[in-house]
Image (tube, rainbow over all chains, first blue to last red; front, side):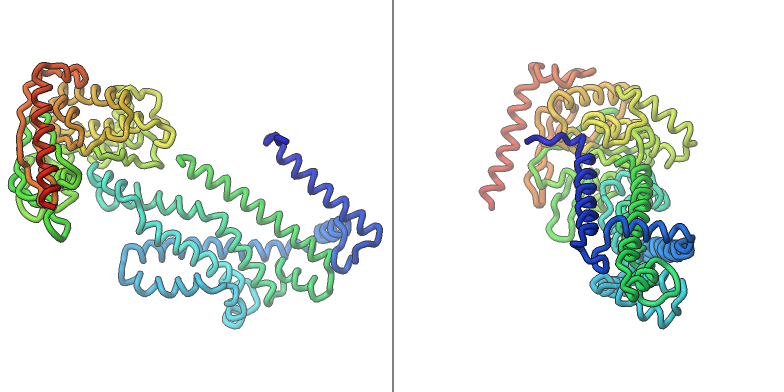
Length: 251
Length: 247
């Protein structure tokens, strides 16, 4: 059977709707324990509750603040360190082993340490998001600059371009394209850092709410929060994708 | 250039090369792979420091243009911006450089394609943009490192024809490196043969008495072409065979 690719999304939506319908029906027929697998309607009700009384907003704000703060700082520091290490061999000698170790370990294990150092407030979450993003961007920029297309460098030099022209017309656009190419991954990392940080120790944020839902065995709230985080991250993915598409339209 | 020797650290790839490119003349350098042809061009434009010997052009760097085998256009700049690049590096106002770039694009049959990024151009169009980029600098000397090797025959013939017309009209001196003996003879006033590297040397010089203005395709039917081609082919084959025996 040949499937018309134009209707792929319709088939996917129909399959999801069917799954949810079966899930709901199983719940209504008492075939599922709502403590473990609450029905879609119970999850929907929990989601509506979160927004109806407005208590979700400070948590969303906290998670967004931590993730976007960590993302911005991580990109900035990752780019600067990556550029400096690529241009100054001495700095590369010092930084590369540290970054390699940080890259090799699951960096979320640093969350408790950041809580001890920076407290249970926003700073420890920003720090975790930051470290997740900065290491990714560092390697993106560091290896990217070292592998910059020599032909383009020679082209600019033979057209009379000086060092400044090289940075402006070759290195900066190259770095921008590598960073933008990894922006979606960086966004995912930033939210992972924020949520895990909140999960470990916090007084607000989506991760904190998840931790609360876990401790009270509130699976419906947990599903609602997972769904919310999913939607939020997908929205930001969409924005990052549009930005990437616009800025890398030459590609 | 006089007595040029080029090495990448070990045994020289090219040794004691001397040749002259007269004003407005078209000179080709042919030879087997690994004879240091590209290295020689890189030394002329300053991308490669020779081990010994001298290169004297009497020209400012901006008066020497080079066309590489790859078009090496900046992918994030449009065709127009790529062509304007060298002009702005040499002090021209951006708006004027862009207008100049448009004029060069039109001259090379690329009118209306100025807003396209290189990825949206065909191989032949990209090559023409690269050519416009160099010609816009109004060079006195153009170095070409097998710039048309990647093009298919028809596109190549057209681009080469336009190039010859332009360099003849603008009286630009050209030093072309190529594997293609027919191309070398049909375009050049002088052809130099390099021996097999390492330690490649210029072993022969051929004066090409074909008239100008020249049609690169029709010039192959000129009575002087075939004997020269046979001689060049025989000399090149002998170089390759001698090296094979030595190895």
